[in-house]
Image (cartoon, rainbow, N blue to C red; front, side, top):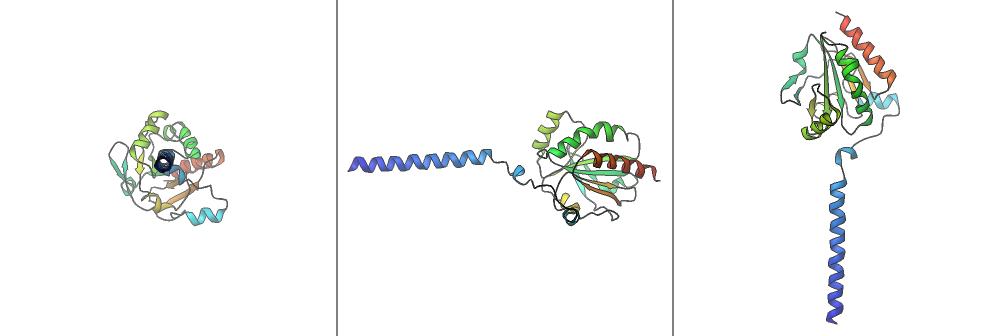
Length: 196
């Protein structure tokens, strides 16, 4: 009788150990950042409903801490054309878009009154740092770990680009990434820079 009770207790302990190990494995494998990824919007109504800083409105001011520890306030950039880009390391279209930025945006508009301001949405410094190192990016990046800045511009979906003119007005609010959208973005940047 005592042996059966011991076997039952041992079996209960083994079962509890297995459940505990399974829970621990789930905790280490689950990435809450990736779990927050949402499918791309399916309609123009969804895009409009999720966009707060709309074309023609004044861009909401913010102060962003940059990767290097410095900070930038959007209103301090008045007089320049600013492209605010919200992205994340886990977002495939964001990553694809960023591969084109150095040559086709930063280098192309170098020396002009233009600032490219990419802001990592919902991620901590160490995540962005590892991504930058892996990709070899050297251009400045802002951090928005609590999505405080992003929520002033939109409620959902990335990548997001907000092109802001010299007077602080949103000229273009785009969402997603594809070649046609990117070409239109570059064309609009050029027109906005040349519209003095």
